[in-house]
Image 1 (cartoon, rainbow, N blue to C red):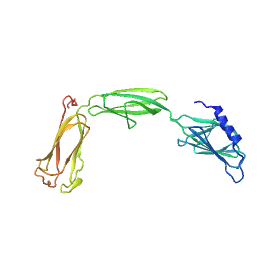
Image 2 (cartoon, rainbow, N blue to C red):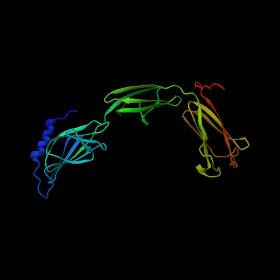
Image 3 (cartoon, helix red, strand yellow):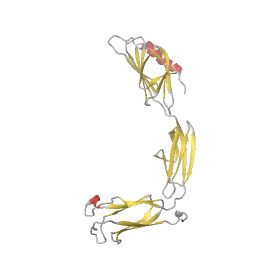
Image 4 (cartoon, helix red, strand yellow):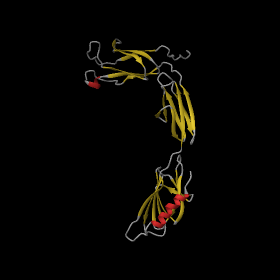
Length: 287
């Protein structure tokens, strides 16, 4: 980072030679920017023969240094002897930001610092095409992403494939390359259950229905038989084309004749089949 001393010196001379002497009962104010990241407001105070400082930053509790000496954290209020001082703020994960400023006696300086994050880049590519990528839980596109320095969790997923994740460090002003190849997932069913375990089919609307839900790992089809207390099949649900993880079918609690079924405990039997070419999870060895 470079500081252009001549420009800063000009700003200081402007304040010194063109700011009128404060008058009793009057307040003189001026506003200028050292650059777009440091904004300085001056105000005559008539308090004493020192300069007063109020320092703020875009990052909460950023550290304050005056002439390289630690003075506290923002928001900071203090005093300084008149003259040229190097005022700087810093915070972890951000570039330090500071400037030389000529302070005048009997003047309040309110200075706002806008810190810039230290970042690097991740260039992410995933096979097969169409896989989704998330970085720290936020959906991201394949290709280049700018991120704060540090370690980030990358997750790649696609229906029909086994999810992969890794922790990838990001280095300042550098690009890290990440390549992930997903493997086909074995067909499997999990989390089978009814969305509403108790309901009355005589009720209107959502309170008179439930749904049979489950999750699958890959492409396939399924058929569900709902059985009454005596074990007889009272309703059937079909899932002909399963092309996403979550499956759901609504059931109104009525029999083949369309009438509400009587009170009782009902069960479900699900038969699921993988699509052609989808691998099947191998069974473990027997006892």
